[in-house]
Image (cartoon, rainbow, N blue to C red; front, side, top):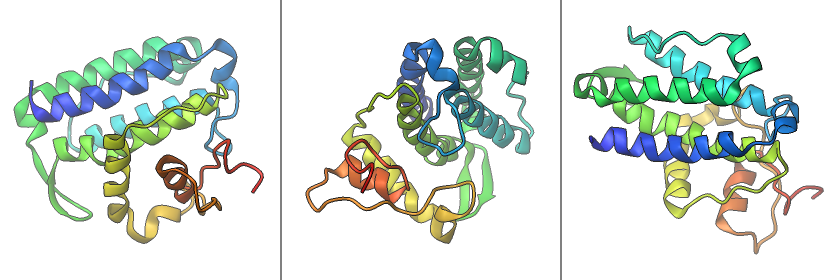
Length: 190
């Protein structure tokens, strides 16, 4: 298995584990993304990945809004299987294109930018069930390492809310989520 596929699969497995254990009432409950339910978070992750592949002439398969309404768990897993199939093709993963920060590959983008999405939105999705999802040190490294790529656009409308205040003794995860405008149970009400 290629490094790209291994990295993507690890991040997608962790995201999928939250999808698999989300209680039925959490699908329509508010997530940590203001105005988005748990279902909306999964729709965003699937839709943004599909759009990325489509921009590069790759078909990520059919997924309709009704699929996310009737079976968000099955829809996520069907989508994830297609992405893995695409990334298993070394020619797809290594395909170069000009990105915002210069020349890159589909594989690098799927493990960095879309990896950021899988990590942060996994936490957002868990919040729809009022759960706090622990991020690993490697995932925190990935998110922190992705921030320079956003540049001034990190706080654009539809990306991240402005940072929320944290205490001086807040742990790394709380500080990073606060930087991304996500109040945690520790920072809520500050």
